[in-house]
Every structure is written in structure tokens, then in C-alpha cells.
Image (cartoon, rainbow, N blue to C red; front, side, top):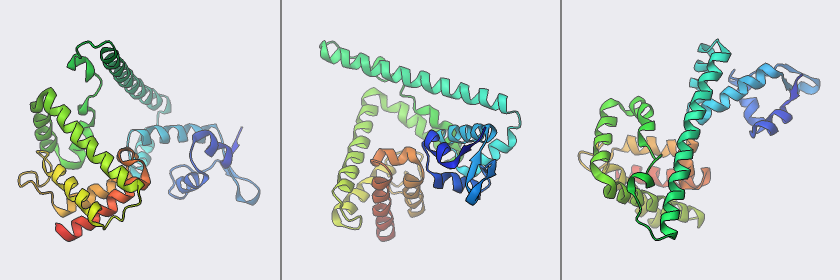
Length: 252
């Protein structure tokens, strides 16, 4: 049985344009074409799409997804590994849900909040491999040591500053602020200062991130959906990127 590109797009929650792009780059060719060149997908193609979407959820770029799929010739074993990852993620999210529920109960019942319970499930080390791949093992090790050294109060303070910065960006983007305006550039300077305050990151030794680092991160905010979500989605992330690019060009 095969399905049309419209059916597959609807079921997968992606656009037909996305599926056509996957075809153009050789990631997901259709099983066949019908009248007028309409693409069709059989069970094998749909299984491949499922694995593509799973790997996208893990943050892999499309080029790396193609390499992974080509290397994983045993489809059953690959799906079992994907399933293990999903189970791990579900357990982590379940811990976060339980943690927030305990905090809410403690607040409503006016009981002391146990920090170990409140922060259970929020494990920054799950990004170890990605940080190491992008910026090196020394960067991760130094940042990790700094984070652990902050203690519970210091970590909470840093989270609050980070979230406040994200809220300020989202608010400015929602109001249609010009990314080159004084308001946006003040936010960009604040963002650069925040980046420079994290030990192990480029420029942290002088408290001033280099231009290429800021530009690279700015582009990543738009390209990676996980980062875009911190700024209200792609539109908000695009505003942040444009403001940071303008700041980097003028100040770094």
C-alpha cells in the first residue's frame, strides 16, 4: 500500500515542501510517482521517514541523518536503539513532571521545598556530546565544573538571568522592534555579556565573546528548533539573530 505525498505530510506533521526537499537531497526519495508526477510513499519509505523524524528530534542535521541511515543497514536494530533513546527521554520528562508537581504541592501547602527534588530531571549533562563535538572536551569540562561549583542558589540565579533575557528578547520581537534599534542593540550587548560570563566559552577569559562565535550562535538560534523555542519560535529567533549580527558587526 502506498500513500500520496499529501497524506504522508499530514500524518507526519510536516509540509509537502519538506518531503520534496528530502527527495531533492536524496534523503527520502518517493517509492514512485503517479499522474502528473505526484509522489507516493510505500511502507518502507514511511518507516524511513519515521527514523528521519526521530533523528531530527535528537538535533542531528540532515546531512548527518543521511550518514546515520546509510550506516544503519539493520533497520530493526536501529529502531530498537531509537526506542531506547525515546524511553530515556520519556523517563527524563516524567521526572521533570513529578518534580514540578512536588514543587507546586509544596507551595500550595506552604511546606519547605527540597532543592534536590525540585531540580530532579533537569540534567544539563545530556548535552555533553553535542557541546564536546561543537566546541571541544575542554570547553565542556570547564563549563561543567563552573556550573557544579555555582551550587543550588547560584544555578537558580543563573537560570533566572537566562530566562529574563529570553523574555526580554521575546517581548521585543513581539512588539516588532527593529533589530538595529537602540533597544535591540542594548539587548544584544546584554546577550554578549551573558555569553562572556560562562567559563569555557570562547572569549570568556576576557569577558567578551569573539565576533565569529556570536555570529555562529546567532545563526544556530534560527537553524536549530530547540534554540528557536527559547525566543518564541523561528520569528523570534530571527529577530535575535539579526540584532546579534548587527551588534557583532558594529561592536566586535
